[in-house]
Length: 254
Image 1 (cartoon, helix red, strand yellow):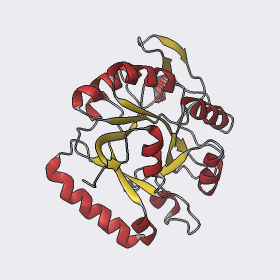
Image 2: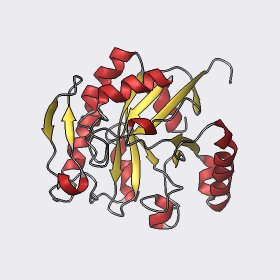
Image 3: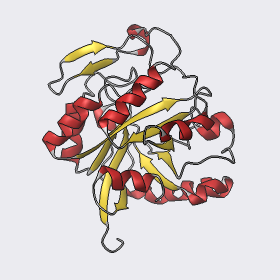
């Protein structure tokens, strides 16, 4: 570990019951409680195209004494998934309102896609979102970084090793004018310490194929949609301290 830096275990791609693909028992309180038991230091809630469960998430995280980051998994016009992280709840909720106005006006069908519940810290359902949250927005990939600047947000292209909904699968390349300084690799289901070498090999392969990634930090997250998917404390970042600002500075390549 670098001198005077903190080494913190993380999982920064988690879906709650607000995401239609997330289990209904993935409430903010359940996520935070399980993450605490698992021994994680940092978690981030990244529901599809909404931050509506972030208020309960932050409250639950404070109760359990675990560091929580407000986030979102944005779907661009090209159906590329981008993780967006914010310095504060206020900024996250403002961006959430902005994104909602840019979603395709498709009504959710819970029997097909799943429920979209916004809940409180006692798991009470406050309301069910009617607009389908997994649809694309009209925000293009090359707009995301500049738009996020207005909300103090940081972009991290999601699961770049997936064969769908990633910048590499959907665009076929990383645009030369990209500004992001961190990208995500999706953790293999059930991954353990013995898989670390294969993940590092994959990261090296991706960096050789796409030289832009050589100047990026890489996150390895679970993309959890069930409680069992939340990863163990096997991946770490080194930051100046455990504040939101320090964590987002790391993601921004500072």
